[in-house]
Amino acid sequence: MNKLVTEFVGTFFLVLIIGLAVELGDVLAPLVIGVGLTALVYMGGHVSMAHYNPAATLGFWMRGTTKTPEAFRYIAVQLVAALSAAFVSLWLLNGATFSPGVGAEHSVWQALMAEFLFTFALVLVILNVAIAETTAGNQFYGIAIGFVVMAGAYAVWDISGAAFNPAVALGGLVIEAVVYDRSLEEAWIYLVGPLSGAAFAAVVFGWQQD
Image (tube, rainbow, N blue to C red; front, side):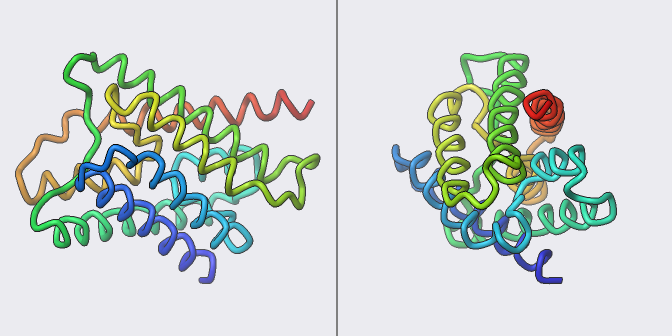
């Protein structure tokens, strides 16, 4: 139970920080998100390994660190937390919501590639700082994870919305679909891109350890 509580709290505040930072229009939103994630990783890393992301859970599962039943529980909790945070963000901002989308000057395939590449980078960093034998006991894991998210957000925000996390994406998309009848036709991008990127990261991590 302590792991699931930690996953809920971490995912909830990650999605809430993203929703508030983006909708308030702060040009420093990627920095705020990166710093916030860093703190949340340190909060929960020693309890649940601070996944906060179904893509990260997939990576840990593929490397055998997270067993199948626990992986399903993690993902369920992450999705519930993301939906809850998206709803709270909607209320705090008087109806404004955040959800990622394909940039106006970009194609679906460019957005898909952006999500794939930077989720790959994120999960590869997570695996290396969390479970690699040569980095065991390190104290920089939270900073490394927060920084790669911040860098990715600055790099591809205008291309895909820089979700790198199916829970983050679906939280906002589903709430907007329910409240504003928004189409979910782009939702597949934020499932296929991050999950395939995470899977490839788990494979590459294995090559690194050989």
